[in-house]
Structure formats: C-alpha cells, structure tokens
Length: 175
Ligand code: SF4
Ligand code: SF4
Image (tube, rainbow, N blue to C red; front, side, top):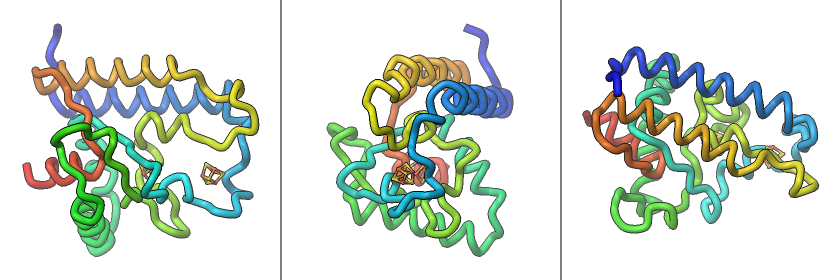
C-alpha cells in the first residue's frame, strides 16, 4: 500500500468529506427537516446521552487544522471546552468506547458546528427524517468510513483506531 504524507492525506480526506456531503445533499437531505427551522437547534450535537461520535487520528488532525482557522482566543476557549468534555463525561480510549456519550464541544450556540466543512461522516449523514426509509443507508456511512481507515493506515502505517471525538482531539493536541 502506497504511503501518504499527512499533508497529502489531509487533502484527500477533505475531498472525501466534500464528496460525501454532496452525495448526501443530492440524494437524501432534501427529504429531511430543514435545520434552519429547528425549534431545538443543536439538540442532535449536545445530547449527552446520545452523541458518541468517533473519529480516527487523521480526522482528528483535519479537525485540528480546521479549528486552526479560528481567532487565537476563540481557539483557546474551544480547546478548553474539549479538555473539559473529556473529564466531565469520563471519556477515555479504554474499554467499550462506543458506550461513552457526550455533549459535543464543537457545537456553539449561534454558530453551529465549528468544523462543519470537515465534520465526521455520521454527522454529515445525520438529519431529522420523518420516514426511516428516507435516511441515507448505513452502508453508505460504512463505505466512507472504510475509505477513511485506508487513508489513515497509509499515513500512520498502523491499523487505525476509532476514539471518541474529544479524546482524539486532546491526543492530537498533546502530540
Ligand atoms: S438535525 Fe434535527 S435536531 Fe439537529 S438541528 Fe437539524 S433539525 Fe434540529
Ligand atoms: S462534530 Fe459538529 S456536527 Fe458532529 S456532533 Fe460535533 S458539533 Fe455536531
């Protein structure tokens, strides 16, 4: 398998997310509720009993790159919120990490998702649909995540791990 520099991989991952977003938008999202009319905007991101978004190391690096576009003081407050989320919700890289849930520290009232352009695949696929059959099929998400795993493996040369988003962001920050 041809290896990639992190820079090359980040570019490819950004493209992958753009393509996935376009596909979801074109084929599914028009049947979902319009988030602009939502009575509880962000409820989907801040439900601490529901959100368990996991990312790989490469995704963490891409999110970190995107957060780097924020003004320094804003960035510092977001990083602090990420660190706090790890403690508050008892998040770790140990055990059944998919059982760990949290209010996502990347959601900000008024602004929405701070990393909208590069958000994780399940976040791109998520929307409120009236009919279950209108949802993007799980296989679509699984296929996109398999592509992400391949990119990650080509970059870091080991089998990728999926960890709760705040956990991986703190690991990348301390690297
Ligand atoms: S996905 Fe659903 S809960 Fe979240 S903002 Fe959109 S309409 Fe509201
Ligand atoms: S990454 Fe963005 S879309 Fe996903 S849960 Fe966090 S705030 Fe919501």
